[in-house]
Image 1 (tube, rainbow, N blue to C red):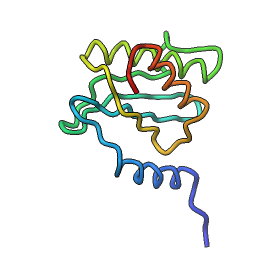
Image 2: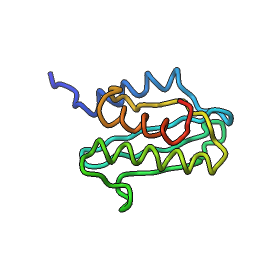
Image 3: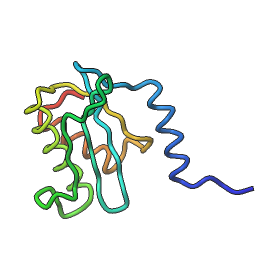
Length: 117
């Protein structure tokens, strides 16, 4: 019997999480994806299926000394872009990851940028 991969287990956790979390026009979903090297975040309105704002650490001006610092700057940039799109409050979708390290740093950066999580 084979063990499921870490990514398969994360996807399963994310599916369970998405049963409870959904973004609306008043309070869109802040979706986080974390790869080994980068972190990506989007603000999504699930009723229309549109991405309202997005940011990632692949952008040249959003890097940092460490991955955690880069995640915080991505959170700040995403908050600025979301506020420009008229969003002030979001629901955090951590994507099946623990609220720890880079995911937590991104959320704190978004709060510093003025988003209400």
